Amino acid sequence: MLATSLTAALVGIEGRLVRVEADTAAGFPKFTMLGLADSCVRESEGRIRAALRNCGYEFKWDRRITVNLAPAHLRKVGSSFDLATAIGLLAADGGCSRDRLQELLLVGELALDGCVRPAAGLLPMMLTARAHGIAAAVVPEANAREASLVPGLRVYPVRSLPEAVEIATARELPPARPVTAGSALPAAAPDMADVRGQPLARRALEIAGAGGHNLLLSGPPGAGKTMLARRLPGLLPPLTEEESIQTSAIHSASGQPLDALLSQRPFRCPHHTATEAALVGGGSTPRPGEASLAHNGVLFLDELPEFQRRVLEALRQPLEEGWITIARARAALRLPARFQLVAAMNPCLCGFRGDPRRGCSCTPAQLQGYAGRLSGPLLDRIDIRVEVRALSYAELTSPPGETTASLAARVGAARARQRDRGTLNQSLTGARLREVAVPDAAGTRLLAAAVDRYGLSARAHDRVLRVARTIADLDDSGPIATRHLAEALQLRHLQSVL
Image (cartoon, helix red, strand yellow):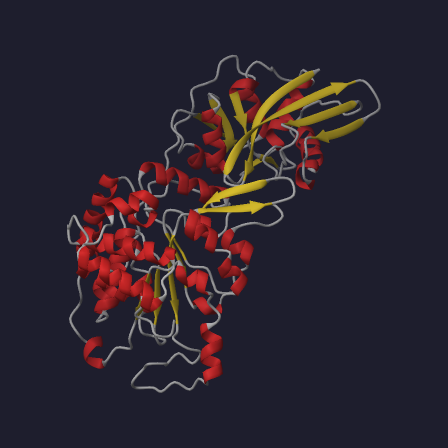
């Protein structure tokens, strides 16, 4: 007999519907798993055998048993196919009804005693089930809250195989037990009022937050670069509903369990020893990296020159396009990675170049080698570069600065003006940039002189215009004035070491 059950596979950050076709026939005893299954999926035979036996099911293994995971060209990875395969085999054997199998998505790993263990990537799988019109899903109880985040889908949490079989064989689906999703209480964000001094860096952070611009902070150790970077997410508006679902799906696909949809913009801070696959994604089974986990949020790279050069160069595509393409022999995978880059670095190898109180001990060769760790094409994609000076005692003991709430209000107002134009300033390109970022006559002459003096590339020219447009939005100004353009140029070329 032949029976078909439904489950889902995780491909990158997306779920794909998989039909588990189970067939039993007379012949030489053999279990065959088809459908491009990896070793973990093929090992499911042992788990299913033990689970069926220990749960009291009389399944006959002395015949030819074939399981096909369709579509056959899609690589199947992981143990989440166990539950659908076990119930499909029972249905093919006549041990349970096949009437409800086309209405249920079955996801879960089986333990040897028949318990149903959690699986990674439940949220993308549930979104796939809803997109295909599937009415309900049977999921491990540990994944119940995550599965319930998708509205319009009945979720049946189960602890064991017999509970799943009972639901799958019911004449009518029973009422789903209410599952209360967790509440994503926003964590207390660090306040900008804690930052003493650094007026230029604070201004740069406000402009970067308002327009989504990439930012580089350079200064001696202990000047406050990391402290400033960690306060940027507090200036940004919360995720929209669409952004929340997309960002949460990425985190679910990476194996992070969810109790609620993410509401705050992610802030990712990988260590400088991170590999290329860890930063941009990849591996033998491609998974999202830190750049994708920072999608719709902030990617902070502390000690930027200490990262391997090849790792940093891999960021050039997502910084321009907002996507990462991972090419493999069988297929190419496209992962979203539209993040805001914030980087921090010391001005030299010893860290004290330009510090009036401590002299720099680096040789000219060391200075040249340190600056050469960052390529020109990568720096060309960073819109704002700011020097974070060492603070004097008077500055350290000065009164608190402007609060995050006050700055966030201005950032939110500037972003609202950009939404009215259709897109964030960082994403303005081509004709649209020429329409909304037109400098006045004096500003045009200033920009022309800057292009000749600094040798600005076409990309840098456009990025200066985008920053100037953001400064004008913060001033609630329609046209770009010369002062807006002058400030944008100053913020891009303040660092003499770069």
